[in-house]
Length: 328
Image 1: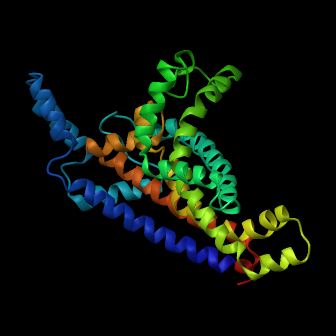
Image 2: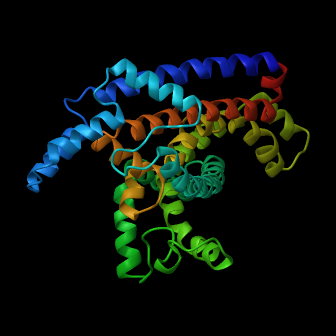
Image 3: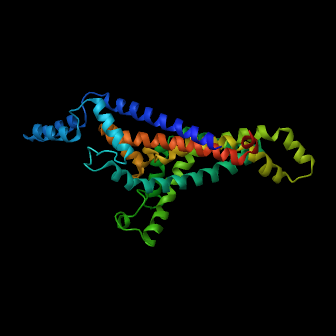
């Protein structure tokens, strides 16, 4: 197991280096840079000193250097914990991401809990009650979740919450607690707002997991070991939850590490933009749009690291859940 972990960590480091280089190169592909856009804005305002100011910025950020110098300088500093400075905010990237990382993790954990609480029981029910009215209802709901974009559902939910329920649905805090220090009141206010983005992300994300759980459980219920468990006189609920679900849930664990965990931790950018959530996703989209390369490059590397960590955790969870994998 230790050799396996060391090998996986080595592969992960190589992947992070490759992804950081490719992402940095792609960000530099469009003609011009952030300061060219800044120069156009300053000229539009009639700022006569724009050229001199932009040249100072170009020297300050090293944009007058070659691509290789910029990448190597950023990569060396990245290893040391310095992710560079955001052109847009003129602040260190580490500080900007640190402000949003806590909220992103809290929202991601809440969404994961809601997704699994919805997907697993509904998937099991749909498989056990195959072709029943309940199965048809769950199937319809899951297809709606699969087909509806998250941002569209967020817009519909936002309209319903404000116009019908008269509930404040934007952001994760009320105005009084946005900049307030952490306290019991701020925590309660967060809980009052957290359920809205968690449910929106969960509904659009649980549809696929319900279908996967249903299909896998139907296949597992036909296996000989399930029939043998029933022949021993075990209760049907024990056979389903203790024997069949334990095997059928393996693909969901893989998806959790390779897809669900990284996609949710990024903050589901479009949903976060619609709901005005202080997560990393909108910051990343804005950095790509404005060619803020240090911010965008750091976000891409962060997402890659989360994907690799998620894959490793899912492999370990599979080994814990399935003795066959652990023995192999």
